[in-house]
Length: 377
Ligand code: PA5
Image 1 (spheres, rainbow, N blue to C red):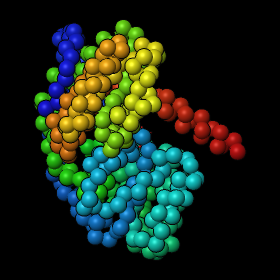
Image 2 (cartoon, helix red, strand yellow):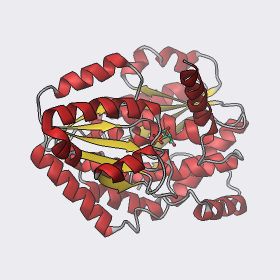
Image 3 (tube, rainbow, N blue to C red):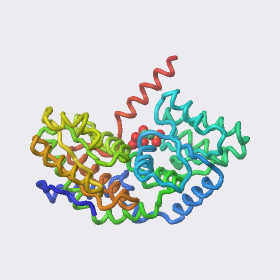
């Protein structure tokens, strides 16, 4: 169970009302998901993972934002040894990155998992078109298409249409779960299973958290809100495990996209200690006091544990509120718990700030502007 070192003021009536709203929200499907995970869906994910394992050296995971960061966060953190090697593509518009990903696959056997809920996002669409071409050149159309796994909306979007027409294996992103809340759907679970992560344990952790983390997630959300109202407009997520760098990226996306709207929200930033004590440490200790720090404290060795204590003392003395979330284990179960905990805390926190946690009008805006520019040329 995740433990916290703070006790904010909690308006029980208001938080109970918020929890009810989240349960009823049409985008609140992630709340019940781990507990009620569809067994046949889980079986299909494992079968697909097994097939990929048997016929491919690489799985190219194509997606961006919520269709990418969650599974990468867990794979990078746990570094499983037994699985297929994962290559990521379609998470930027860099030609250089795409070329390097294509070169990395080289002549090896590979499969492709294209992940996009809308099925229209430019970054993954470009990467998918290149990797599909490579598949067809190497295997011919029939086998190429049998190596493509499309994770997308059941009915809408170009990708859904293409997948049905071409007969790709399809995994559905439920209507009631949005991008950044979708790690524990096929969006995350297929790449994770292929990479050798124990997805049963991950779901087990999230299921436990769906009961045990409600109180702590509410506390954390209320603490953020309290700090936000006092003018602490930046939250720095601090981890002492370098392999959790992508988990920090997932956190920033989760909170940034869920909360940063209507001129509200707390800007999410991140550090990895002790590395960043030698760069951002000076600012954390003694810079402008508009930030607070949230330590995600994974179980660690004695020396690293001493650094955690030293940082808590030093930064508290430096005038920064330091929140500490103690994670019980650095494994699939621990990450399952953490993901559920943060999703819930984020949704409650956004609601406290009076914004919708589940839309992302700002992201849509950029997509529309880019589309217009491209149509002009
Ligand atoms: O969290 C979100 O909703 C976004 O970050 C999306 O996941 C991201 O924009 C990618 O969208 P899509 O899955 O439709 O390609």
